[in-house]
Structures are given as C-alpha cells and as structure tokens.
Amino acid sequence: MIELPLRQLPSYLRWFPGGSAGPTALAEHVLATRTGRLWADRADRPRTVAVASAGHVLLSGDPGALEPAALAPLANRYVLAPARFLPALGSAYDRVVPWERMVYVHGEEPTLPRPPRGVTVRRIVGTDATALASLGANSAWIHASWGGPAGLAESGHAWGAFHRGRLLTVACTYFLGSRYEDIAVVTAPEHRREQLALSCVVELSTDVAARGRTASWTCSRYNRASRLLAWTAGFRLEREYVHYATGAPAAKGLSGSRNSAVPA
Image (cartoon, rainbow, N blue to C red; front, side, top):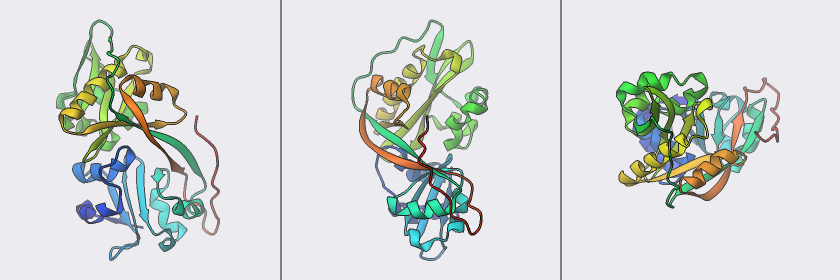
C-alpha cells in the first residue's frame, strides 16, 4: 500500500462507517485532528483503503486487490476490518491475534464519585503537557491519538485528577467522531480504586454531552475492571466486535499463521 496525504481523507470517508460509536470514529478523528495516516493500494481509483491513528487501523475495500506484502505498513497494529480480509491478514503477518471487544454508550445516570480529600478534578489545559508526559511510557498510549502530551493538553478534550500538582488520572476523548466521542482513561497504578477514574470519566462524559455528542467506551471483553467502571459511570453495552492484533510482516514466500489466542 502507498501512503496518501491526509488532505485527501475527505474523499475516502465514505469507505468507513460514519457517526457510529466506538473505534469506527477513528476516521472522523483523523479528519478532525490531522493526527494519523492514510493508505491505499494505489493513488488512482483505489480498491482498498486504510486509515490509522494511535496504533489502530480501519481497513476497507477489496482484499483481493492486495498482495500480502502490500499490508506491511499495517504490521504491529490493531486492525478492524470486515471478515473478508482475514485470509489476506493471515498471509501478510507472522501472527494475527483476535481481540474480542465491547462498545458501551453513555445513557444512564452515573454513581456519583467521592475522590479522596485534597484531590482536584479539572479540565486539562495546555500548561499540563508536562504533567501528561510525566505519566510515563506505560501510559503514553493515552495521548497517542492526539500526537503526544502537548496535543492532548491543548485539545480541551481531557480531564485530570491532581494531588499537590501531580497528575494521577486522566480521562480523554480518544477518537473524536461527529456524533460520538470514544473515551479512554488511565490511572497511576498506586492510585487505583480511589474513584479517581470514575471522577474524571463522569466530568468528561458531561463535557461530551455539552458539545452535543455522546460518550462511548471501548474495552476488551475480558477486562472486568474496565467494564465495571463503564457501567458505574452510566455506560451500557451497545455491541461487540473483534479486531486483530497483527505481528511482523511474514517472511517472503511464507504464509503467516492466525493464532487463536485470546488476550488476558
């Protein structure tokens, strides 16, 4: 596949679901933020198109138009594609692992949180970029869809829980769609179970509603803690789906195997 300039993305939006909850908002997010990449099998009248952000990919079109090597740019990512792409993905990578996922949509009153004394929950602003960066490498995924800490801090789409100037939790819009904002949250490990995540998610969900959109929540089917947090914050299950974690490109002339492993 060849990379196309993002200015061409409006021409390809019809290839992807629009106005839907969950990770399918990715294409609209890339259009709104210009944080992502766009590929096609060819520049003129493409038959297959992919759009990516923060390690996630939406893939659409005709898999028969692709040789396995053409999918190399989508290696080591999470790919959401119709089932007809599975043979092509299986031939393109040394492994393809299915992840069962769940999409929740906000629609109920949340359980009101009680954060610890001394904790302030507020909107993240531009000057909080350093605090976001200080969350560390293991939490860097939280700002990846905005191009890094500065991009998220300046977006106006994040809320944080602070104690004595230190950022303990951040909840943010991860994929900004036209009707839905798919949100995410991360908390410093030593401050979990203190209702900090719930506090930030409740504020963010209210903020999303004030913008005329609905918050959605995506997590692994096997992430019980995330599912419980979503329910407590007023989210209810809308649908389930599967995306695929791709490995490295398969060796030339060999077919990759599709593992059936399920993530913990």
